Amino acid sequence: MDAFSHDSTAILTRQQENAFTLDERECTRLAQNGPAFRAYYQLDATVAFVRQHQLHRLAVQFPDVLLQHAQRVVHCLQHELPNVFWFVLGDTSYGSCCVDEVAAQHLQADGVIHYGRACLSPVSTLPVFYVFGQTPICIDDCVQQVRQQVDLVRGKTKVLLVYDPRYLYAMPEIHAKLTSTITLDTFMATMKTEDHPKQSVERATTTLFLGGQSVAKRDIAAVDESVLLVYIGPQEQQLINILLQCNRSACVRYDPQLRSCGKESFSVNKTLMRR
Image (cartoon, helix red, strand yellow):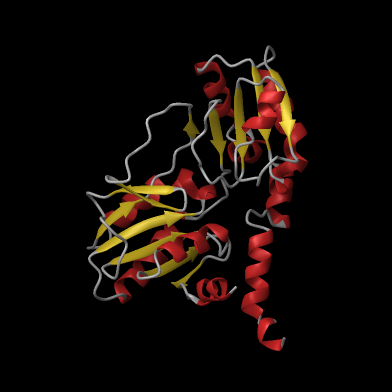
């Protein structure tokens, strides 16, 4: 039994159970800072989405870790959209990463605002706006440390930036700065922030999908030994999903909370495959 009580196994188990987490400092920051709260929950973008699509009954879906902020989020949205009915979804029919269209339809909602980590599976009945959150990151420190690590790697022709969804808002600037400072061709995976029923789905023949993110195959046909993955974010489920799919490629990870950067070990990946 001791063989199965290794630290890496315990870490993996905690990551699977808490695929989307907020540490105590982050909760305190959101509770005390009005602008940070609005930015994290993308309140302005949410209001614009509701107005653009002329929605009137909205289900807002929170994972357990964010449910503590549901009342405050809805209060802010009600203040700006007083003629809209709001319903909070907490205990979902499926995993919290999936849009609970069934529960939303029972409430006769005409749209869903989904908060937290999302698997981005296509929706079939209702328009959805995804709010991943906006966790602080020091962009200059990130670019500097990633550049130093990339300079140490040999035998690569391209760099692919992938990331925790909470840093999506910062990725265009990070991508632009890295592109201007390293010699390898650098590409950034993209994520959709909204989805609609019957929306045309990108064909697998032209797009490479990685853990809910995508990159055009004309830029990177496959993530193999020639590609260096650069991941921005903590060591959580999003990273594990990508490493499992791209286990032939080396990976460098920058942790914005710890402000540290280094080559990512595949030990977590191997632990998962043994389970």
